[in-house]
Length: 251
Image 1 (tube, rainbow, N blue to C red):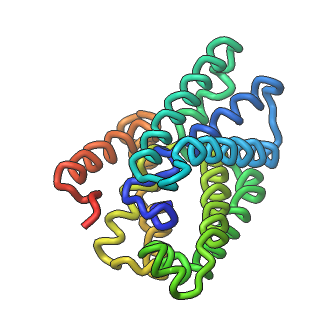
Image 2 (cartoon, rainbow, N blue to C red):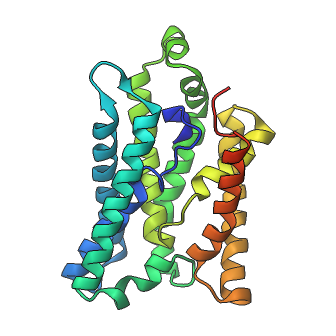
């Protein structure tokens, strides 16, 4: 997400994608308290797509194109709006028991059948991202440079955005919406690997998975808090510290 938007604070959770997927799931539970795992994935993907369309539509300027500040503000606004709608529907339709475990996030509610259906889509998205990681490296540098090297920037951007939507929807369907993981982990990986996405992507996969497992273990065996709370307690101070030192500003 950071590569295709050239925005150091781009994250599916901050740009409304995760909240869109979550709202779609809540709407699905409103019609049926028992949803098949494939339907959960499809609902998440549909919600993520609609949310991304809304965010990018709001952030687009006819003369200036996509501005970084407008993108972040639009994402924050859409995230707040969709989260509020989701919470309202949960209370009004008495869906608390159906969605409370998913909203808390975590691996506790997963089972092998769920993994068999959702994980192949995650592996497909990761494989495609890695295969075309060189194109993402070029795209992330500068649009003028990318076009000068013969890259079709619009098509490549849409391709990688589709991968982001697929991975985000699958992650939300599997473990819920977990804030700032997609922002903090890639940032620290970049300090080690530089701006080469052929290295960034696999290292981020491993580091993100390890971070999630450690937090989930702490949540379930040590402090007894929801996974989303543990992750927020860890990532928010780090995010504020990085903002304070100017780590997200363009140099």
